[in-house]
Image 1: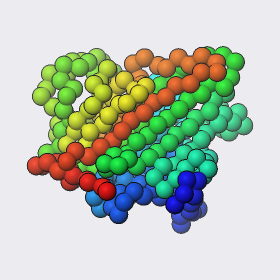
Image 2: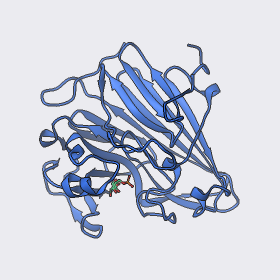
Image 3: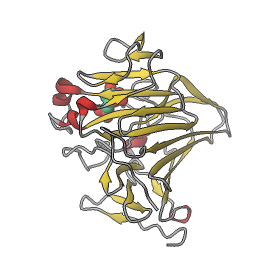
Image 4: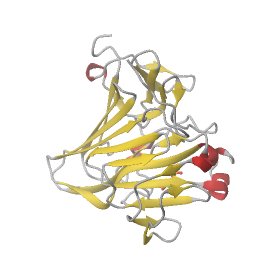
Length: 295
Ligand code: TA6
């Protein structure tokens, strides 16, 4: 398929989406709503979690996949809405900039959109989602300040990784880092464990993470712009409080989210910020995800 031939389809909910493919067993699905990746199949296996109770009705954000949190992560910004409005808004699919393996979406400032009522600053977002050669999924988020005054934002790519074995799942390489514990009033603590494990609710903002964060079955590469990472699993009680989430679904995923939280991005007029992450699946290893070798 030549560049620009990406086809936008419409699902049973009337929501537009595109399917990216690379080789016989590597694919991803991205929705216009939120420019939201809802599926990443590698080696014939689904690698992301989507809740069976997700609400496929805008403006509700889809539960699972890779929500785009902008212009804020959580409550770290001026928006009343948790995680800002980008994940609740229909982006524009740019077919001419897309291909079989990559999809481009844009979102521009719309003062008339009630979802953007808390945000007065002109902006343009561009998200490129692409399948890379070796079983890798890349997100490249570009933020342009198209207005006359500087603004700041926080952001996160809120990835829900499928974890068939939660008790055997861990996130490595964060020992010694400071994190804000969202379960304890965002108190700052130092991680002194060999790895982050999931025998209870975990909701932490790790500050200044290494460029590669290893977890069971995946590697999160922060290639540009990001600096922090949120690690989250809702566990039993919070799972029950989320209406678009099954009571037992906490057993099926963890979130490891490339983010900019500790130091918000300061964007001058007519300037651009880029955040880029690459998700990869390490070669097949004992107890982890299935390796994904794609032609
Ligand atoms: O990323 C962790 C977190 O901030 C948790 O506190 C939890 O609220 C999660 O995001 C999901 O947020 P949502 O608004 O999608 O329910």
